[in-house]
Image (cartoon, rainbow, N blue to C red):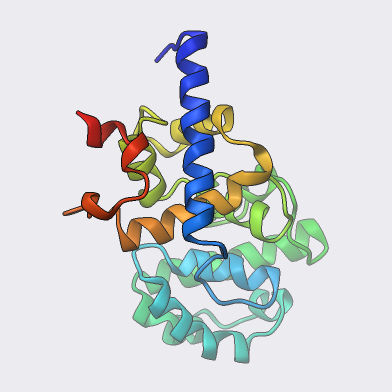
Length: 217
């Protein structure tokens, strides 16, 4: 969709207002996945596909206690990984990609997570959503984690026009201050769980109601 300069400015102002309001509502913004090391966030994010973060955090307690380094995972027995992560679902595919991504990190990156989207997305099982999460939370760089909450809420606010994650990411890059982008996406997850739900959003108590296009139609 092509916007006029005036329409772009209106959307930027609306985005800035949404950022400010969510900062007030959620002063602390952080990923709900529990991790201590960069590779642990990568693995936890892979496990979170079609699984709740709460369940992932339970499973990774045992997983990260047994396998402590990228090298440990690269050398791991897949059947053992499958056994531990089974409650997360899709455990065979996830176990294979966890071992594969860690082997590639060892072989191609000296055991350290690469720090660009392009390199991160070459790792098995790592798409742009997880790569953006790592860019923001591990490397402190601008990041646009376009999960279902982000896509839904930004669409309702009239900030974005597509339900496609990559298109949404590209639209948000034009609207958000880079230094605000990562935490804004974390706050959207929190807000999506608390208020702007997929079904029966609680519009009557929404602090974004005044700038929500969906609320005004």
